[in-house]
Length: 446
Image (tube, rainbow, N blue to C red; front, side):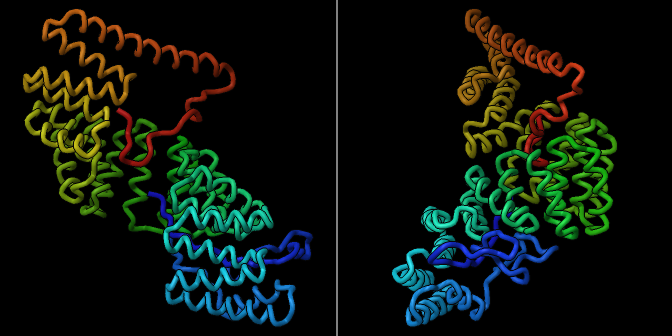
């Protein structure tokens, strides 16, 4: 899961036009260097980037252009709001900042603080409205765009997070947090290729930040950039020498290259370093399953399930291993439990049908395959398996219908592959660039 423990930036507000920086850019909610995320400090490690009371008061005061008494009032309200935030009295803090808006409706700082308070209360749509009001006053202001992106990421709305975070990185190209967050938003959209240059830049800004390095490695693997992945493993090991995750990632790289023996060696080493890690045991079990070493796969997957009883992928591959070992009676209860959790998982429903077939429960198998096709009508293996059951039940018309459907889907798949090969021509092999691998260690293709 993408880490989303990011915190807002305090923003400078202005009742008039944005002030100009010495180099000609707008200052807007420009955050002093000493208040920004430091290199090596990831967004996931932050517990807050709150300004001191003096700095916050200075920001409100510096950009208030009204009479002296109004400035004094804004400073007083700002101090009150900040005090309430420290006490987590969110409604009282919001009331103080709303009072500032009654005095200065164009206060970007107050709008940003109201957005931040709303985020703390998990009122994300309300936060978005405040940030958008601030951006209407200054569309390219760094802090507000960053805060809006954070709000969208907390909502897991990665598509809408991208634009404000792109604006934030354009305003401050060397800001680590903006770069990392933009990459997170792109990864949330499965756009690993576009995330890579931002992660590479973030690594330049914070070369010892492990979280960013691991995200970069994952992106290299997802885009099959194995040469780049291998080139950075040594640096990761130097920073995190006892981590099993380095071996997991390297094992996944070998798996992607088809070097299954080396992948297994990496995962076996990872097991020695972290025997109580469910992901490590699953990874090794999966590789044993892939090379058809089913007894060893069964042992590892059982251990993984003991460590994490809710690990769905472990359940699926353990059940599939039981089917391969002709133990349908062991596979059936596991598959039933997974379908209860996820009733539209076509892959699991197909295996459920196989278990019923092996147990001579043909009618139950028909229902399982039909459910799989309702979830995914273009799943060729479900059509084919259903055709076989219909043949066993002596239902020739339905047998032929499902067999024809399976053959058409397989032919369509072959034609798509042939078209891609022909289209590549002399431009190189597009297979390393088209699409992404299944997400994460537990999303392998069959």
